[in-house]
Amino acid sequence: KAGVTQTPRYLIKTRGQQVTLSCSPISGHRSVSWYQQTPGQGLQFLFEYFSETQRNKGNFPGRFSGRQFSNSRSEMNVSTLELGDSALYLCASSLLPTSGLDTQYFGPGTRLTVL
Amino acid sequence: ILNVEQSPQSLHVQEGDSTNFTCSFPSSNFYALHWYRWETAKSPEALFVMTLNGDEKKKGRISATLNTKEGYSYLYIKGSQPEDSATYLCAPTEGDKLIFGTGTRLQVFP
Figure (spheres, helix red, strand yellow):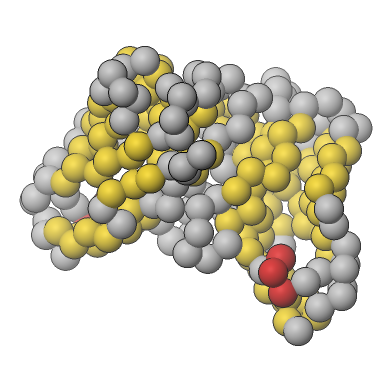
């Protein structure tokens, strides 16, 4: 079974631009969660999508948005990029909506650098 | 938001040494705790999901215990090997979200 894939793996943008990251979950998984990791911080929860609906949202500004398609693939968009958005963005998929008991399977991440 | 603390931040051990690290979290409203292993340039990999006070899980040379009353979990590695070098993350739940600690970075030298 193929794992979670994320594209692109690396991205360089400049301040003020916008960026879209993509995540393809494990086949059959319908829940996709997004996390941000910056140096010295744990993985910070961004949002979770299940069946094309946002279930949960973390404490991030409205510049961060996402969506999920009918095939469960998910995209994350960051508008008006700031230097502080430079981070590793990870997505994770699970079979069911996150309940605290389900294992989440992570992708390799997209490394975003904002200059 | 939960305050999750992992200690130590980093650890260097010799091959064959046994080691352990700690995850501390608020004990009130506890539901579940996850442990992940994250090797450099790879994806985080799930190790355990723990729910019950006194729970003990084992996977090969790695085991974990859980004390929900005092709010901590220990991860033990017996006879560390170089391939155990990774960052170990714990994540208790808050509602139906995982709240990750900053991890313990383990390096095992041959």
